Image 1 (tube, helix red, strand yellow):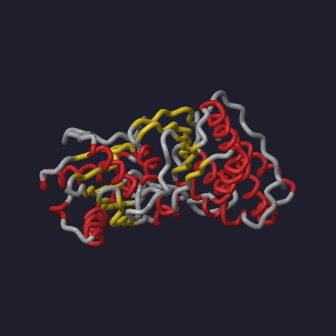
Image 2 (cartoon, helix red, strand yellow):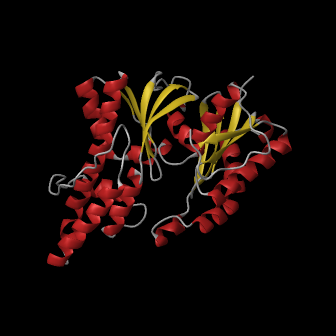
Image 3 (spheres, helix red, strand yellow):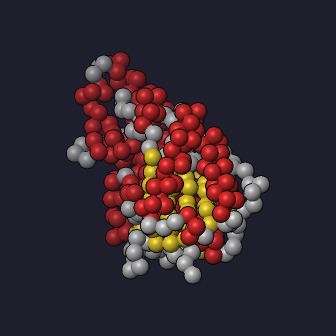
Length: 339
């Protein structure tokens, strides 16, 4: 008998629902919230209200696109955390009601683990891109930056994390300083492609172990821009592309330095990247370069599975379902949730 999982993701500003059958994706629908661009970041209250409007039609569409009926669903998986509490409450409340109405298991999913397990989403039966255990994963997004050792589907060990800001936040804040709209990461990536990434040099932080820090870099970039504008008030406009390329190169080099150290010390050469920043072309290029230099086997997810999406929640729910790791109706979402 087939196992069909409905996944629901509502950790931030995207409402998403997906259907996975025996590990193969049947549908993955996302409702975006463009309203936040006007505010330079996600407004929690607006996000939760939009989730309330979007959750029912998005789930209905996911079930319709999958070509199934709701009565065929084996379990419903939802994002337990981390994320915006108001947004998480919408997804968890819907999932609880859905579970009760059909008398099927409820499965809470860690959003960060789901980003990593997105690598195991199959698009057809012959999909063989899956990583082999153990592997290292650079989990890098707007809210989190970590190096994780994955020993099995549900066995993961965090080797290092950011001690302050995440890499994605550094992209967005530096982009905001240059006048880019939110989110700035993709804009910086695009504008950097034909620019000189060596024109400006920024100091890299020194942090112990496999941990990261991006707060100092963000502040240094702000002060550098401030000082240059005192000399030339057109400095940003005249150097926007090169500034973007230079700060992007610095962030990627910081990420890669720790990842290389982790690979050396663990002896693991199977390396993956996950999270929204995994879509960055400069990071992908750096990973491929290290793959050639160090004989790494690299796993870079498709762009549609890097940002927040319900398919990653569904695939995590699938593996938890196989182990019968179900949640009770008393489960509560958590804004801060560790591995």
